[in-house]
Image (cartoon, rainbow, N blue to C red; front, side, top):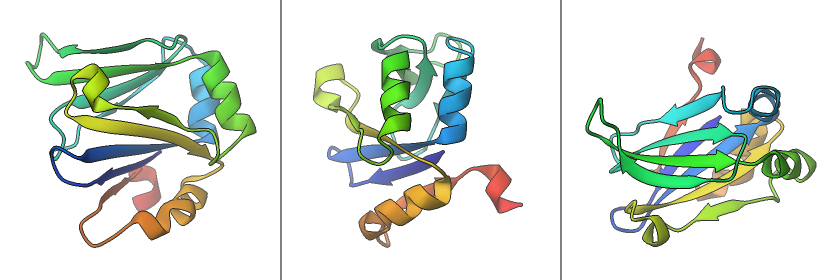
Length: 135
């Protein structure tokens, strides 16, 4: 998974890139698999899960932190797989009260997605990489 934050409040965008491995697991285990993104520069955590296309913004009762839940339908997952780097899900923060926008796309690998978005990456862009790739 590729995670990037672009811009400064109130014009921040969280960019999430799902690899084919992520898509496979989401499709294989709907409602049981999720990816939680908690970045200090964002006013809320984001939780991606599969099985339905619901969206919800609220407060985690255990942590007190704001959370934006984003469900991806099986149709979303199929389209991400069929149209890597072309199928986009764009969620405007103003529609959900999150304080930031979210852009979700897919690519075969994290390397392919990084190459695709490399011209968007500047000196102030925060990029995080899956821990397995750092080893």
